[in-house]
Image (cartoon, rainbow, N blue to C red):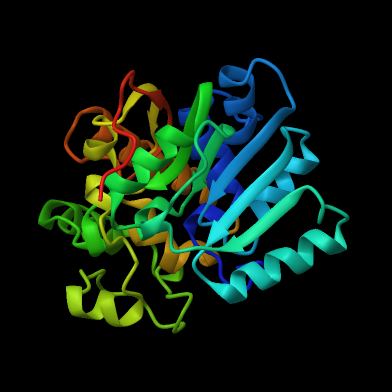
Length: 293
């Protein structure tokens, strides 16, 4: 991921600018971090932040570059990810401001009242013990501190609904053939199917392990200050496979993509389909539980 050899639907600038930013910040020029800072952090830099599921560390380096915080703690279960993140932070002269550590997020034990904000970017759906994690995040925040995440919250282990698959496959069938070639195989994509639970576990036992519970469980521990849905129920399934076929400099092809964006957005707004991705900012409920086993 750090070398950009893997490119999912969220990694394409055209999708980010034309589809996601208008739904999260309301402005194509303002991405989610900028919106978060402007709307929820009245004074920057804060003293200390926490990043959960940091991977290779691009988010933490961005927080330092943007002068959002004086220091960041960052945890991930993968020793290799922590090694890469530490190395890259050192190369960019940020080693003294970012503290990386290997940690099993499902068994977090955080310092009380330590952080001005806690952030998770596309990592919560890898965590299973959400009650415990939310309780630990809540107790780790300073008074006035907030928890922000940008996240997949769709069906657990990608068990997409029958209606979701029916609609996305109907859309697939009407796309021009040149736009239906799989980025993985190069062959024309005939159908998008639901993986089995067993296939998901073999691929990655943490992938979307408890994703459908992310939002319902949150309300037990936090007051939601902002919740912005941005779909993904079509785009995730479809464009992970075929986005590489589109030339967004060609206005006809760009317009076709915008039409797909509008279709997805309309289906979510009309509650035909749930949004599988969202941006959320929350603060601890008064007297929320300090820890749950």
